[in-house]
Image (tube, rainbow, N blue to C red; front, side, top):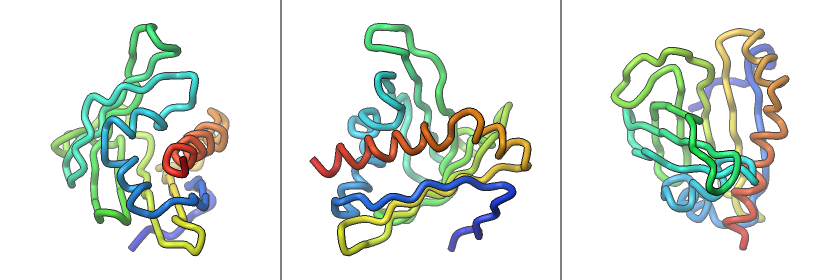
Amino acid sequence: MSAPFDPQLDLEINRIIKAPRQAVWDAWSRPELFAQWWVPHPEVCRVVTLDLKPGGGMVTEISAASGEPFGPHMNACFLAIEPGRKIVFTNALTSGWRPAEQPFITAVISLDDHDLGTAYRAHVMHKSPADRDMHMELGFMDGWGTVAAQLAALVEA
């Protein structure tokens, strides 16, 4: 079960990906695939940790371009996992349920069967309307939309 969408606090990306749900799941669960689509190109992603279990960590780093130094990108904790169907993570916690310094989002990634492949939904929740608005102003639709398109391109190929 997912939290209902609250337009005051939440943002969302929906996309039909023309690939089987398992292929989309693999792109989320295999670090070598995850790194290929998780940040908008031409930025480069390095996966430090991708431990898909409740309490497991997701730590990624980002570089402006190949060969540039990497810096922090995402440090999050997985809250719930339904293999092949759902991933819930938050950056309010880090690996092992440790509190994070600057919590910002909780995301629910849902994968459902669709006639054309997979219905992909990224539901991103914020603690306040101000945080939601800031995320929108930072380019949520472009950023999360771009990585969803990159994910689709990877698994549809």
